[in-house]
Image 1: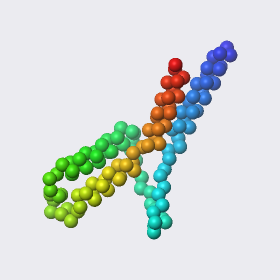
Image 2: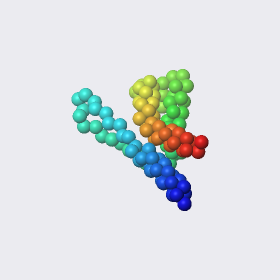
Image 3: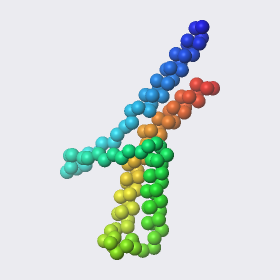
Image 4: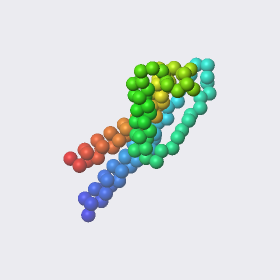
Length: 117
């Protein structure tokens, strides 16, 4: 009976470790010179699949813009710099990549795989 209790306790500890790895999603705070007050903009996604879709769509837009021979074709956008616009979108993509979340998934996988071996 003690071995079953020990196994249950070990499983509970593993689960608690997984929750600790998932919960503290790190937020990035930037300090810019001349602008001490920064605003954080958030958006909601239903799951990681939707976040991956948004990121890949933004990257595809950049690829299509880079493939374009001339500047933006629309007369309403002739004042826009293609390079600056693409750089802005790429900075957005970089900022929404779930770095801490992906690192926690690696730690969870390592924890669970080492437990099974």
